Image (cartoon, rainbow, N blue to C red; front, top):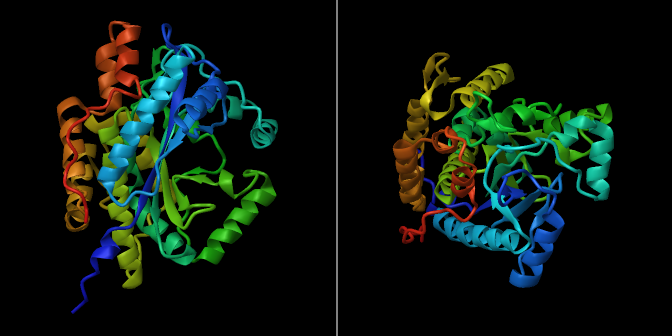
Length: 379
């Protein structure tokens, strides 16, 4: 009989990164005001925002969190400060995967690294005026991290639908729930990663891509799940930035539980399902196109099934972990939001069909989250 994992095994730490778009407060068109917003955030709040590839984006990072509830409170506070900093300089910070209005290319941020990327990748770099959400979960070591990535791979399509939030691009309905995903997929090293046999195998593949020039360094290995470059974590980066904090926390809680279960499985010698990368790509494309309300390929059964049912499958699979680590209430709250209002893309379409710019910007404002009482914590 297998020994039950310790409670600590179900409670790894988690961190969340969110990228936001800076737009004109009236027209909603992207504006290159990141340098000013970063400066105001530092001077007024002591908040260190991160620059992104273009001057119309900023990034927030939570602290290392012990559970989903701490992440929720951190995100509420960070979003509030970003919103205030943006308003102070006369613009607005919105949580959206791609620019819904106006131009869809950005001015490259003036840093050595970003200038190198722009020189190497030309117009492709300028087109990355898009915003994602990345979740980091602690793992014991690099070898485990690679194997955990293998276990997470089959669930990448389902994870991506949780925050699908970019139906518009430049004022046009793209027909996608996540247009950001299609823009991001243009990078030569992006999408679902290969199945790796070991850390050495991972290193060899990365070295080959750097030699080929398709990635300048390991930080440009833009796969949807990867061992983090500088932290002892697995990083899941498949998602649009969430329209609300509750959706961001739903994503973080699912990723945390999935990684925790994977670490236990790796320790028990359970081999991950080796789903072909092309199969995963088809499923990810289907979810980006269809969103929460559609059907797409279930990579484990090989059948086309409702996306919402596949999300339920994941939650049922992780239910013991979520109960053990205290994150189940956060997951239930996020699912109630999705069931009541749809994903971010669904909500955008409802408010913007009449062309009401202010309604759309109000929906996407980073400080729009429900400030409900905290749920029970993992102790």
